[in-house]
Length: 220
Ligand code: URA
Image: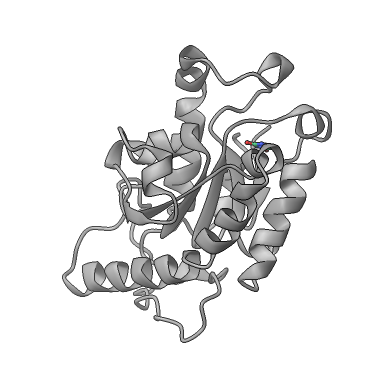
C-alpha cells in the first residue's frame, strides 16, 4: 500500500504500516486511527487533500504486530524514493517506528511535539521532521489523545520554520534536492513564505521538485 495524497505538497505524514482496513482498501489511515488523523488535521484547519500520507512499511504486518527490522529494511527504498520525489519541507512522523527513521536514537516520550532537521539518509535531506505519537496509541491510551491535539498545534509553526529555512537556503544558492531533475528552462521563483499556515499544494515552482511528481509516484 503506497500511500496517497497530493504529490505537490509541502507536508508528508509517515505512519507505521497498513492495518487490516488499509490492507483491504489499499489506502492509508482509513480505520479508527485514520479518523483521528482527520480530526487532528482539521484541528489546524488542514485536510488530507493538502498533504501526502504514507507509511514506513508498505505491507500489513500479520496480526497488526510491530514491523520487524527486516521488513522496515525491505521497504526503506520505497519510502526513500517517495520522499525524494515529493521533497517535502516537513515530515510529520506518527509513532516511534516512523520517528526512528528521521531522528535516530530519539525517544518519543521526550521529543513528541518538537521538530528538528531530518537525517539526510531518510530521503528527505532538506526537510524538518516533527515527531508525534501514533494516533492508534491514543485509541489505546485515552490520555494521549489530548497530547496529540496539543502537539498538532505545533505542526503549522514547524512548516513556517521549514519554509523559512528553505528560502534561506535558496537565497544562499544551496543546491536543490539530490535527485533534482535537469534545470527547467524557466527560472523558478523562490517559494513564498505564506502568511497563512496551510501547506502549499502548488509547490512545483520550487527548484527541488519534479515537474510532474505524480508520474513517478506511480512507481510505488
Ligand atoms: N496505522 C498506520 O501506521 N498506518 C496506516 O496506514 C494505518 C494505521
